[in-house]
Image (cartoon, rainbow over all chains, first blue to last red; front, side):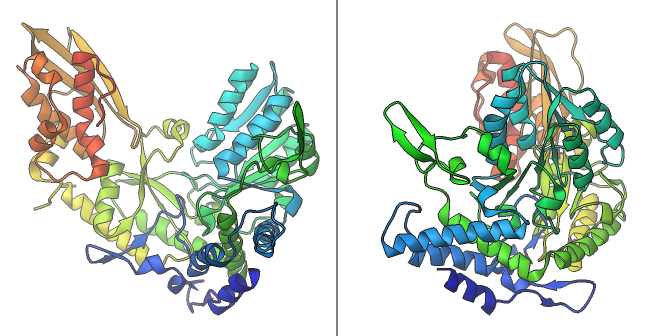
Length: 427
Length: 126
């Protein structure tokens, strides 16, 4: 199976250098970019929500379903062995992409499920009354609500690290919280999905470990956009998701430290995650299968394996360079709009390719509506980060986010729609 | 002429009628639109089974604010029984602009909050 996916990747060898400002010439790899809306070419600036998919990923999914589909881990026939090999090759590719071990790389449905896995399997056995879980004000709901539920259930305290005016965390506040001695786990995002802030994850995980606490990093907005080596990050748990990394929906990833995963009870129980089942009990399968109950998302894993190969072939340094240049252009152009305020760090090098903004006199929802008229896709709302919205003292923001397939000209199109929008609103 | 952001829509958005607090009031309710974080509340004074006066308060997009403002002018003097029977079409006709499926919730938020205040019906699907 791997042979066909491999061949497709080679045939569509991505990213011949574009010639100017770190531009990647990958647009032809993404068939959806040829779509038009009301005569306007699609300008997709919502990659922080989900990324578009290159042809190789679409083809890998289809090819798996067309020629290699069987359930995994139970068939002796040749077709089932192909499916097994494809699934495990996907795991190996995904693990290699982030510098992790295959054995400690667990496939989940998404980041939400990955965090819930830790909150249930690790949290319910390690967090009790009098303990604290520490998160930050810039978290996505996926990294808030599972900890709220855990703390409520166990009588533990949930505390928040604050976000300052420039959208950054304060390292001394982390130190202060850790010194209190009750923090069992610190969960925080690598890159904020609203502010774009890149947190100093390696420094933070080192401090957390030195204080005897466990760390969980939400890498959903980091892995698709910059080189990430989970060994260098040093987190006990690191979660990310496939669909933001050019892969299919329905496939997420949890990297965990082996000793912790070994000690933890399973999260979901049932088929595939057992070693044996007796009438009155069961024993658990080895890692990573202990945490993959039921038939896993096999074709989705294969698709993600192809997506990370595609990104690896492009080179994540180049991806970051390209998106960094786009982000700088985005910040510069947005600043031209009267009454527009951008949340988060002021400089492109301090942030991922995300810019959340408000325009005086136009509600974010209307900003997105007006952008849509030019074929431009941006998000408006609270971006699943309501506590952060309250910190920013806004009900909602508009958010533009870039991907490898975007160009400076597309950002200029966004600007045209925003300026036209001000006119519509008589500003 | 803009299809959606017509002059009267923007006029109601920028200068919403019947917004603020109403004291004293007999009925009140609030709702929010989880999609966009919009919040809208209403306070209603009742006399002889009719809405004597009402005020909306909150924040939201042009469509949700203009809808509330336009509706407020029609709701004044309406019998409560009649208010309880108002449907989505009433509001959308009143608004007079093409509303996409995603903006429907914005347009109908005010009717949802009014129905909540008048009949305690918090689960009206919009």
